[in-house]
Length: 88
View 1: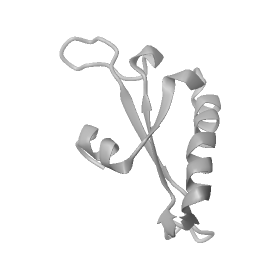
View 2: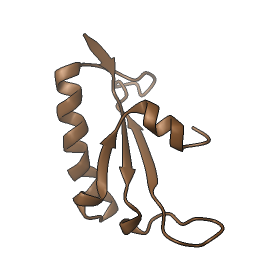
View 3: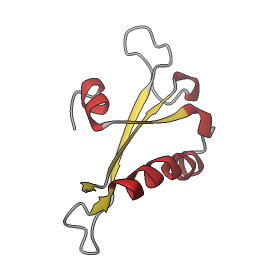
View 4: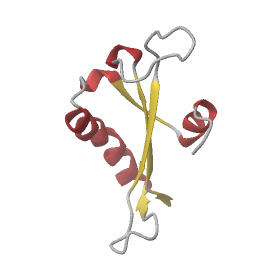
């Protein structure tokens, strides 16, 4: 079975990339990215086994791009992402 290539991550408050608007204390942040087709119009489908591998490898890619400790990134489900992010 295939699934859409949508990947979500929680970033630990330790990363200090997000702050509570009331207390100004560091808080968790959430990241989502999609893999698009060559025309960049549609999210591609990937086999479930491949999805899991990409989701885990995404931690290292994001950590490098954002200059964060990989331990601060955790793969999460779309549902968990949606529960914690108001606008998408």
